[in-house]
Every structure is written in C-alpha cells, then in structure tokens.
Length: 87
Image (tube, rainbow, N blue to C red; front, side, top):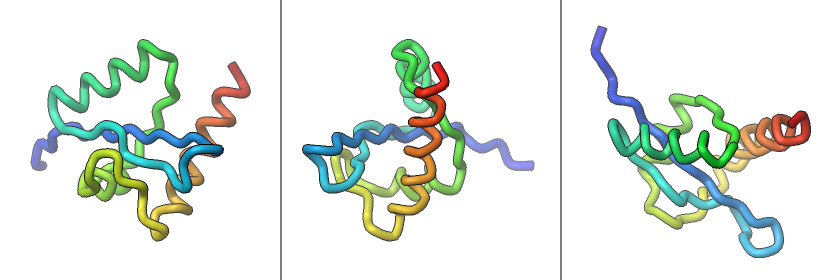
C-alpha cells in the first residue's frame, strides 16, 4: 500500500460578505498538519473527506469554490453548524 501524505484544506464563508465559500489555506505533509493544529487550537470543527480535499487542493488560495462543489461543501458546512450547535 502506497503511503500517502496527509492533505488539508481550510474554507471560509461569511454569509453577508461572500457569494460562496473560499479556500483560505491548503497544503500537504507538515503544512497540512499545521492547518489541522491551528484548527484544533481555535476549536474549529474538522471534517475528513479525502476526495473533497484532493479537489480543493487544486484551487487557488482565496478562490471561491466552483458551483459543482456547492453540494459537497454545503454538507460539510451543515456538519460544522451541527457540531458547533452541540458545543
């Protein structure tokens, strides 16, 4: 089995400011670990989705996600809102 490097991507969405979520951080290896560490330190919920992070990693920083990813990202945002509401 091939050892894959860990990847991470961070999204930001401000309802009244943005027309769609955008990529604010992305990386693999130690950069991915740092993104995850910062999220944990700030109590930002983390959702693992290997396929989605692969796609998000191809986008440019601060680029809004394309419409074909709206559903997948909406599911993640729903998860985050649900987790946030529970805490």
